[in-house]
Image 1: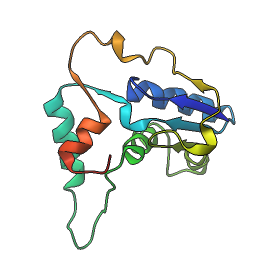
Image 2: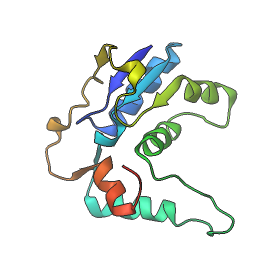
Image 3: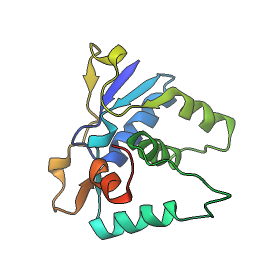
Length: 139
């Protein structure tokens, strides 16, 4: 099992790295999802997720979660063909966690190559934690 640390890493690049490893028949665990960085302007990011959360009706759904694991998993789902068996097995191989679970504390953690947030040229980014505090989700 490969354990990827998403702390101060660009979320999309971590997701691509996880999908690549899952395609190699590796099981992947992404930890510290709440500390991942979403690049782009704050207004655009907030508006995008607010729009996603407001779809449907309160009585009939869709009922979307407001957790760091869900945001990371949803990003990964957008990169694979999740409606086909191949994409479904890829998604099953990838697990996302907020923080580091007890059974993975001693495991060697990898960083996704080229995903460090310090390489961003602007201040146009926000963490998943910041986004969830604005959306009213669990952190």
